[in-house]
Image 1 (spheres, rainbow, N blue to C red):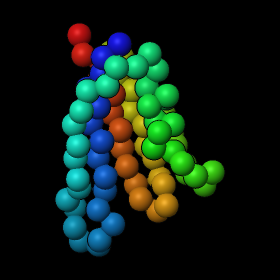
Image 2 (tube, one colour; image 1 turned 45 degrees about the horizontal axis):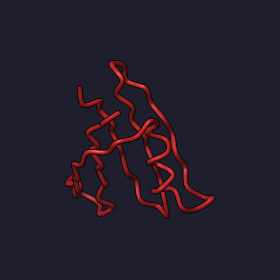
Image 3 (spheres, rainbow, N blue to C red; image 1 turned 135 degrees about the vertical axis):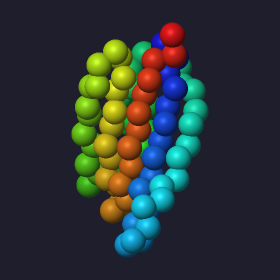
Length: 75
């Protein structure tokens, strides 16, 4: 299945609400398999959120950096 992947990296600076946003397409049978590429420490915290209509959102905290990954099916 093909997904549009939006990766948002939150800025750690106080009073700065900007975030880096990357958009790509991925082919995978399971978005969690793609997330295993980004989780490279036993201290990483990963939470999955199913939003409906096949959209899956992962919240990752890795080395103190907060990120959100949103997988949207490309129909």
